[in-house]
Image 1 (cartoon, rainbow, N blue to C red):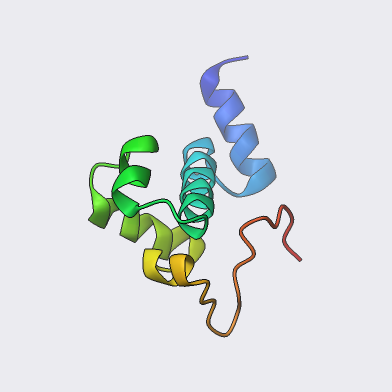
Image 2 (image 1 turned 90 degrees about the vertical axis):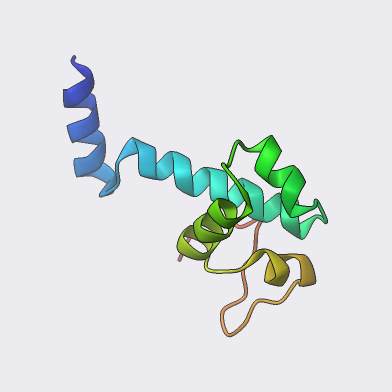
Length: 88
């Protein structure tokens, strides 16, 4: 099976590309690290983000929270459970 076929079938089944799933998982990992008290600069290096603004954009896009909110445990109207594995 070609890579293109795998990508098409994956996107058909999930509605997302494999790259998007990797980005979401990377942002969730960053959220877990930040919530555990890891400094943003350390998360940038550990997860291979280009810089802190890149990390901030990914967090807002995929997690819906800022690094400060994650560190403070602030969740807003819909709190983020960084350990949640399934969505409802």
